[in-house]
Image 1 (spheres, one colour):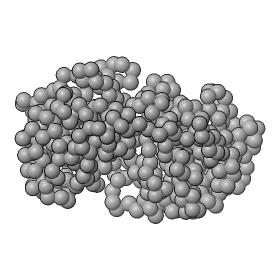
Image 2: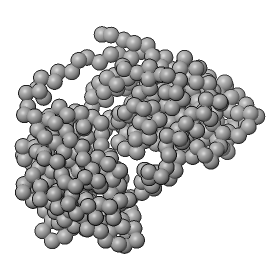
Image 3: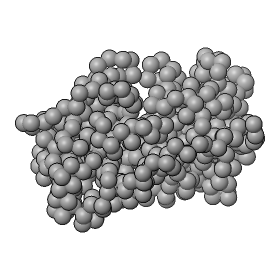
Length: 443
């Protein structure tokens, strides 16, 4: 078993809104600017943070999720991607110990599983020496993690920081520095996906954060105290996948449809030739054996999607002739009759599925989902503000959908001919059989 010693750590916080994403983006860009090869990771099912990680680090961010995937799979993909980097940085999800059920799927569970140290980001805007018991609690609550250091956010003076340094010293955790409050490094609102707007220059934003963090955080010391052992991954056996027929797979990917898990795409590449296309810009659907309409924010591009009539007709003809299609969330919305925007205006879509969706009265639907179809079980995540309106003849697939706690989830999976669609973003990164069954029409 080969092992390497390298800087690797997980950025966590006591709660959401503490500034861990800002700190993560600043560190990714600062280390990348210094010439290091940086590998970002994101704990949990989030899509937006990995997009921003990629901009900051110039490297694809990988989701680590112990609800949607097995512990063995999470370790394997972490080792695979971290092995090629000079430094590996994972951004946590919510508070350090917040999971789908107690600590299940939490940042703490992932840090413990991977054996990597934790760096805590604390919003110190209205806090001084009281940070001591907070840090003490996070350090000692769970013996499975190693809290190595703290970076404070919203610290506007050296005297303020001195109180925070005292707190860290008395608890036995290193104070690594701070970020002052700055309006020009605030990350724009993610409500309804507005932070995906092309009008926002995230590259410039990452540079501003990196410049600021380099002045007030001891980056060299951070790399020193987070040196830990990485076990190199074993070579995967891909013989089974290589013996399968090489399918033609079309994947929607543009500003409106961009929510894809990297490992999901890796599975598709194993099974055949993947062609990316844009429902916004391209005229027709590429020739394919499987169409994957990924999630995203089609509601931000309704006029353009609706006006691309040749693409709408092309996809409707493909699905209507029995072409195999899997659509999730934004992709499902696109396949419906129409999408109603927040102002109540209706825009025609593909008009294949017997449903319409509306965001006129936004309501958050959020949570992990387990799906059992016949003998196949697969897990995923639901996150959307729109509401589905079933039309006459809407056909629901016979399956069982449950929450992380095993309760029935009010989320339907629709089937029409060889098309399957739902609001759930499924993770098949370690379940190549799901896609094989989908292509063979066994659902």
